[in-house]
Figure 1 (tube, rainbow, N blue to C red):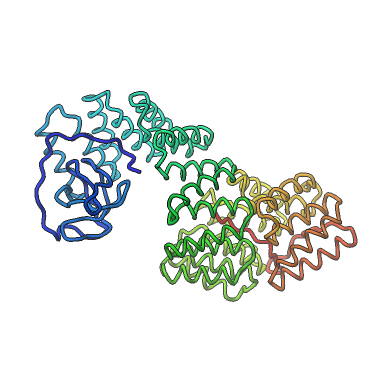
Figure 2 (cartoon, rainbow, N blue to C red):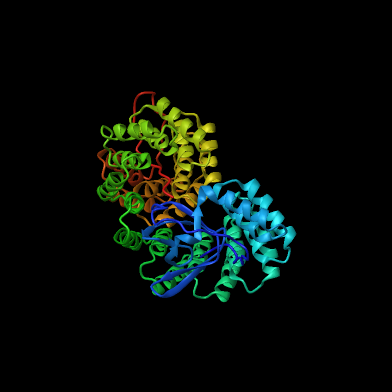
Length: 515
C-alpha cells in the first residue's frame, strides 16, 4: 500500500539517464507522474516524491514495489542523494506551487530529517489547505516520531477533506493501534476495507489489532482472508503463527513458521520457529533452527544468545558460556545475552555474578521483563526478599501478559520461606494465567503452577502439575528437583525455596522473554 496521497505535478523537468545509473538496493525518488508496468499492462502509478528501493534492474527499467510490484522507467527518477537539490530547483521555478514542497518534504522524511519535512509540508498546506493528501503526509511524519495524537489529528482532517480515500483511515488505524486503542484501530481498518476491499494489507493490519486485544480467532480469520487471495503472502503466515502461538496451538504456529521458511528461508524465519520450539521444550529442534539462523547471519549476536539460552535449558552449563560470551563480544549492549547469562550463573550457584548480569540487562533495556525476573530470582535465592518482590512487580509492570513474568511472581509468592511474602491465592492466579497462555507445554510454568497449588493446599492438583512438568524436563538437575517436589507434595507439604549459601547450590527455574 502506498501510504501517501496521490500528487498531481504540472511542471517537473526530467532527463534521460544511462542504463547503468543505479544498482540493486539503491533508493530512488520519483520526479514525475509515471506508470509502473508489467509487460504491456499498467499495474500501479507513482508520483513525485515517492521514495522507492530498486529490487532488480533490466536495462533502463527498474523493478520496484510501491503498492504493486512492477517495472519503472529510470528516466522518471533521480538518486536519493540528488533529490533535495532537484526539488529545490523546482520550488524556485514554480513559486506558489504546493507540489514541489510536498515532494521535497517526502524526501526529507525518507532521509530522517523530520524538522525539514514538517517545514516543507506546512508550506505546502499553507499554499493548498484543501489538499487532503498533505495532511495525510504530515500525519505520517508525526507518526514516525511516535507523536500519535498529532498524527491522528492530521489523518482525521484528511478524512474530513476526502472521506472516500482509504489511506488516511488505514494510517489513523496504525496510530490507534500503536497507542493500544485496538477498538478504534479495528473500526478504522474496517472503514479502509469498505473503501478498498481488495487491499490485503488492511486485513493484515486489522488482524494484528485483533491479536493485540487477544481476539485471536478474528485475527486468524483476517490472515486467512489474505492467504485465500494470496497463498504466498509470507507476512500473513508469520502473523498467523503469532496468533496460533498466543492461542496455545504451538503445532499450528510451527507449521506456519515452516511455511515462512519454505517461502523465504531467511535467518529470521528460522529463529522465530526456534523460539517456539524452545518455549515448548523441543530444545534440539530449537538449537538446529538457531544454528541455521546463525549460519545465514553469522554476526547476529541475538542468535548466539538464543543458542546459549537453549543450552542452559538443556542443562549443558559447560557449553552455554562460550555462546553467551561470544554474543556479548559481538554486541556488548545486548540485554538479552546478559539476562541469559544471569540465568546460567544462577544455575551454577554464582549468585553475585548473576545479579551483576541482570543489573546490566535492565540497565540496557528497562523494558526487558526477563532481566527483572532473573534479578528477582537471584535476590530471592540470596534472601533479599523485598528487592526480589520489587523486581517481580517491575517485570509484570513491564510485561503484564508475559507468561514467564507471571510464573516468576507465582513461584516467589508460593515458595518464599518468609510467610509475609507468600500469597497462595495470588500465586495461583498468576500461575494459572501463565499456564493458560502456554497450554501446559512448558515445564517451568507447570512447576510454578504446582508450587502455587501446594501453597493453596490443593496437593492433588500440585502433584498432577508437577508430574506434567517432570515429563517435559530433559536436564538431570531439573528432573531431580521435580522428583524432590513430588515427594513433598505426596506428603502434603508445600515447597520452600531456602536461600542458598553464596557459591553453592543451583537453581534451574527458567525465564525467557520470547516476543
